[in-house]
Image 1 (cartoon, one colour):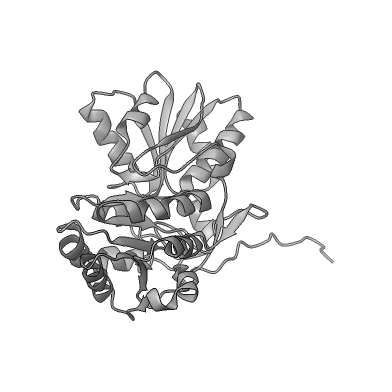
Image 2 (cartoon, one colour):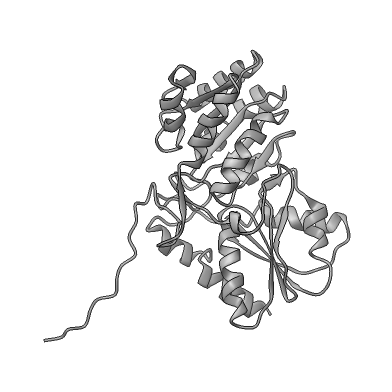
Length: 330
């Protein structure tokens, strides 16, 4: 009789899958807790959602401040329209839904009701990029591309619980509309090991390196740091630049790291069209920077459904795949 053990299958909930590695430090619902804490200090803070409170961590705020929470039902256009009205009265609303609904379904309300008058409305989009296995209906792989063209809209793509917790009060204090690519549930805690503080509109050099510079945003900064450690075993010295604010983009910090002859790679949990890679490329053209940049991003296609670890490996976002890409490009 054969005693061969079948390989362990990668399984996860497709909708609320975590991208945290086994044993990794995490923080539960950092957005919900940060918003609830901010509301203790600022009575203007209100929270709204479109029937997705527990799936965007807004339920934490709702439990702490039930008199300042508004459940709008499955009506994303109403969600953003109501948030705009609240902002007109001097309140500071945070409106949460899935990124696909905020960008595809309610775009006109975000553009004309919120951004055109420059209102302080903070749109919180869950499941950005490839953070669910439910397929194109819920994978917001083009949300940044859709929203980058809206004048005056600030776009934040946080790496971890540190970024999220520190960004919430800065978004509330910002004079104008914002869009946060939310990481929900048990979110990894990574950046506290790198003497890092979130600053709206600023990128940060997390580590230096002589051979390669990785420019990343969102959860891909976590993967960039992991890849840098593994590449050290190949005697490749890797720098990592984290750009949590995609618009306005910190050209000064990022382009300063592109000087010299290091291999440059951008990493993003977004389509290769219209996201970090093209943001970096356009800045380079304007400033006549000639360094070649290799993108690690999602392909320009509708993605498959499936288990999240399998999808990240298939589409090149897994740490092992990043290491392979960098070694092949050297």
